[in-house]
Amino acid sequence: MAALSRRTFLKQLGLGCTALVAGGNLPLPETPPRPRNILFILADDLGWGDVSCYGTTPNLTPFIDAYAQRGVTFTDAHSPASTCTPTRYAIFTGCYAWRRPGTGIAQGDAALLINPKLETLPKLMQRSGMVTGAVGKWHLGMGLGPGKTNWNQPISPSANDIGFDYTFLMAATADRTPCVYVEDGRVVNHDPNDPIEVNYQRNYPGEPDGVRDRASLKLDWHHGHNQAVVNGIGRIGYMKGGEKARWKDEDMADIFVDKACAFMEANREKPFFLYLGTNDIHVPRVPHPRFVGSTPFGPRGDATRQFDDSVRRVIEKLRELGLERDTLVVITSDNGPVVNDGYMDEAEEKLGNHRPAAHWRGTKYTPFEGGHRVPFIAVWEGQIPANRRSNALLSLVDLGHTFATLRGQTLSADAMPDSFDVHRALLDPEAASTRTALISQDWYMSYREGEWKYIVPRRAGNAPNEKTNPQNGALFHLTNDESEGTNLITRHPKKAKALHNALLRAIRAGRTRP
Image (cartoon, rainbow, N blue to C red; front, side, top):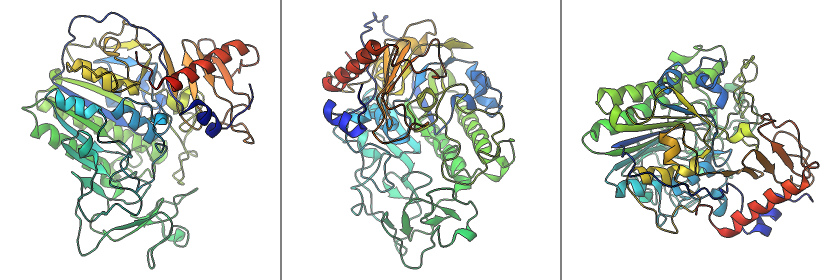
């Protein structure tokens, strides 16, 4: 098959890239049990191999490992993309991000990427009678976009416009400006006498610069991350003003946990849906001092231990409120792990024998399993069997439809076009998933059907490496080759062509759910 650029490929196909699920109309049981509350915890860059209950030995997540024994650990769960923004877009809209242009990794001052007119996961939860909250990492834009969003006024549109009753979010990502929190559309601790300005083209006169002032940084950069300096750390993009509003990285995990716990306490008498997007493992990795040195793996390991403690504190609050048996808890990650992601934080030097993606090939940013096969743990005491494992195929794009079904909501025909109802597999580790095929998005698309996985040809002129793939694409038989070490595309060209054509049909159809 001839090599073709991703842009050309998407243009020829009509739109983009991710997961088709063929068939599987399994008969639904009687009305499934309905969780009073749903707590959805989405880690950032947490690898399959970072969580010891998956059979690895880093001992970074002792609480999660023990907590997983109360429910089901899924071994074949996937993010819809191996990067942040497209995964989160798919989760909240039930639509693969490649269907909507401009949903790659969002710039820090990007406009809100989700159209407020769309059906969304939080809107469905609201309709079911829940109070909805979003705390932590967002990375889906807010406001009107570059040069148009006024960070000194109420920001609209925001996450509150797509179905969340309460929001406490970082404006972009931890390594991008503006480095402020936004609560219900307003910058927290905003000082009208110190207005905030954001620019992704040039620095402001008199402001520190990550290149010029590199010697003064408390965390040096490896590549990129050398523009604005906030809290002694170089970032992507520039900003000025807002000194009182700027976050301190070391306190971020505690602030998100406190806000999540406060939301649950305030709504303890009402059904609630809470999305908690943690930041810990994403760069810059600057854990609180009480976690520094808590692992032998440097800041990345310490940040993972901090994430584990954040989960512990939130679950303990759920127990304190007497809501554990009434709450479905899902813990997963937005994509696979990455070690060196732009800062000199000893992540590579102190990695030792630890493999964050376990035995899977690839990392974040790649189409290989290590980029999108993610840890996924579901606990609902009294409803989900304890101490079980499941190999059911799941995608995070399915959460919207699945949570809707569990809360008694029916999707309209045109809502969430790529989200499958996998509630049977979620509740019963012996049940088969309604999803039988999968596509994941990155620089390259991959399409999986059963035990076969196909990766589209790489862009012409790019040398093959972990972030690309062989010139003519790749074909792997995952049952016999979990590590994706043997490319079978020349041995099985008909299978590769069949999967290629299935991907085309998924794109042209505009939807993948029946």
